[in-house]
Image 1 (cartoon, rainbow, N blue to C red):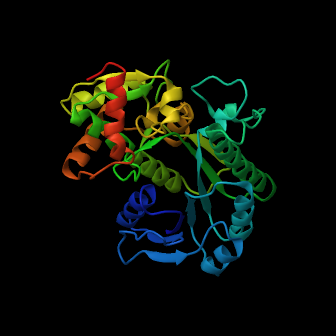
Image 2: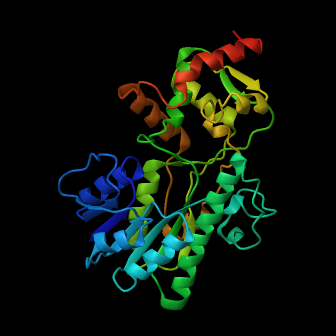
Length: 335
């Protein structure tokens, strides 16, 4: 199978490329090429900014692919451009969407099922707020999904959408899980926003790769959307307790008024999984219709802990301000 992957090669794109090569597929990647990849020479590399329709058309030329996996489609105009470019030239187009397509809906309660997509979208927050950027991300992903659905309805454009929550991966270039591990290992308290926390239902990066392979094996696109996520829903405290046990450390949580964390720009780096813009997805449809199975949370957290022990990162994002965090914790009565 000839497969084109549109998007970066640092995280999921890297893992996916290697998995497809190992399965005997021919792989082409298309991205701007700003970050050097670590892929073998057998991978064909095309260069273009996917937001530039003319450059995208030039880069792809007259090539045809059995499948295209788009990890970098973020809005309606880019969706229209890719549909126009690929119609009649592919058997399957897989699109990475997001659970935030539900978070911008009005009056929904998690866990979200696929049918929750339909309905009114909440008004945009203030453009000056961080919430606006998160809202815009979800709203524009919906625009992209709507273009694909219309292309299926009118011309049977062969797409499948996978809606993803937070992805925990060995190659997460933000090192979010490792940031928690590093703080646990230094023995100091972890700053978290005071008050109730949303529960977590993420997904393991290797499971995303396996889900794509499963969908590809199923054949041509079906004009359907699926949630993919781990089976377990856990509290933030529960998640961090598991990490503490796996790293043989003591969990010490220091709740701090969120306004203070925002004022000092410590959030989200000090606790990225405290973000309210994280979705909790019901994965039952992907299991019953696609036969996808998910790695237990405890198992993949152990794999991540082992990975970071054997491949330590010098300083995860935000950890350079750890002394500020500890000073704030001390001011709150923690030592």
